[in-house]
Length: 330
Ligand code: SF4
Image 1 (cartoon, rainbow, N blue to C red):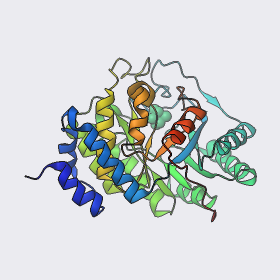
Image 2 (image 1 turned 90 degrees about the horizontal axis):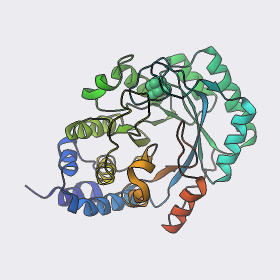
Image 3 (image 1 turned 120 degrees about the horizontal axis):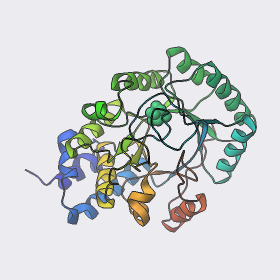
């Protein structure tokens, strides 16, 4: 059998065909001493199929905490005894956050709400918020508002929402261990509707929640079959009070191996580091950006602090990685 990295060099780097589930599993099983080689190949794949640019994104929480769902990793669930309390952001604060995000050079600004799906109050806030931002700030507006109806999908597309985030969270075979209040199929359905409506789809999940290596490969293949424009990869940051609060954060080397493997499965996607990387990767975040990642979030995450925006931007400058500019055909 050919070595998996030799095979990936031909199949993925030269031909742009992503690894399948069995091939991904082989990469995830590579010994620690070959992880550098894996990361270097993932970086070559990324620059070949996506270019040098890194997409910078900002994120703001429009409605925080008090969600009725029971995703076991999430401190915004109202079902667990975690310290995040329910709160809403007003429209002027939303616009200010969009302005500050645009000021960092970011091209995407994502409005997030901790809900099962939007009710009329939230849709009204989003409608007004998106308009207020688009009136004064040059930035793509993205939303992450949970599961949608077809009518809500159509409305978000019609008001100019550029990208919609809805994560599958984990492999289908592990989903029932992570969430019991809704199904994997319900999540999948929202993702498909978003894509059909012409919005870009952002769909990823969280690694290190107790899934097996096989389930990581399964998850990568399931994401690839959905073909999202962007894949945010989070690493579990165990939050006090949640059912996964006492799990161990995954090791940096496992996180890097996973990121590089996901890049080889999805050569053309925007692959983003999302939450949890500070505790998992520490100073190795740089290695990830030279190991397949081509998008970063600046500033604060939803409920935990990320690194300050200027640190991330300085890291990209150090690595001589250009920041993607806003397309002028907005
Ligand atoms: S992940 Fe989303 S749907 Fe699940 S509990 Fe958290 S906010 Fe609610």
